Length: 337
Image 1 (cartoon, rainbow, N blue to C red):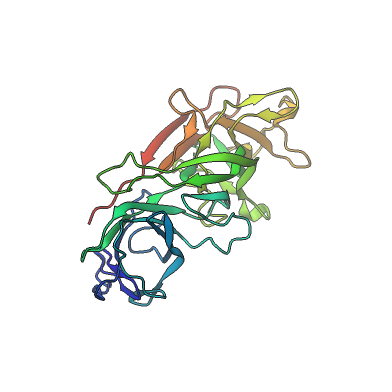
Image 2 (cartoon, rainbow, N blue to C red):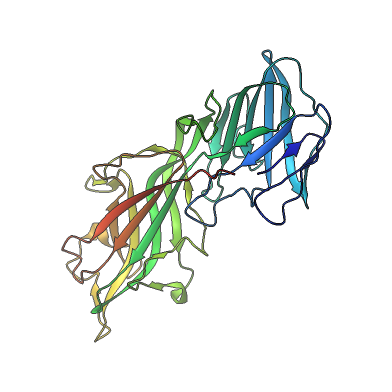
């Protein structure tokens, strides 16, 4: 568990290299916990590098935009802040986004107009009504975004599927995050933040080739093409709509895969071909476009703090029969120490 004391903050974690806590009489201390996630790239208790703290007491600001950063074996910030005689409400988030031009300045209870770049695992924590005590304030961070992964594979040995681009259609990239007005401790998993005022609805590229040498040949082993490329995995939690086509453009939310399919034995291209509809042809390329919905009977939104894994298997040489498609949802797990 991590212990932070204002002034000079030391962290003690479950990790072997974590420092011992340092205390200063009367200073506010913090204990930081980050929930476990199903992907190693997400932020954890041992990898969190910094966070911002706001605090309010008796209706007035008490700590504003206090930046806490890992400094070797300690956490440091300045100036030292001590417990007041009245209860304190704490709001914290990580990483430090205060200097991000594309996002609004965080304020009491919300982060307005947060512009998501897809690569940042935004965390938040709230502690309400804390009073002076020797023990640290336990900040239990939660994931503010949804994590989305697209896993591609092909198990048909008669064909070779070569993928050039993968993107998500019509997703909101900007919104306002509101902290819950309740403590985010592990004992109260229902205390979560919310998103509103969605803006910037457009496509987000997950994978793109630069040259022919970057084309990915699918195998029976599912591969997440966002790894080692754009690293875009995090999205603003938002409502989803069914994928459709209005005669000239695709509507709703979907996953677009630009690819070519070849006969393994002859090397001949079998898709796209002369009978492929124009809507599935990628202009000025030899590739075709496959689209898959992100909605199911059970999923009509991306929820805060949930991970969505879309498994797509392309096995049909004529791309006319239904392609196997299923969805699994892994909820982020809370780490308790």
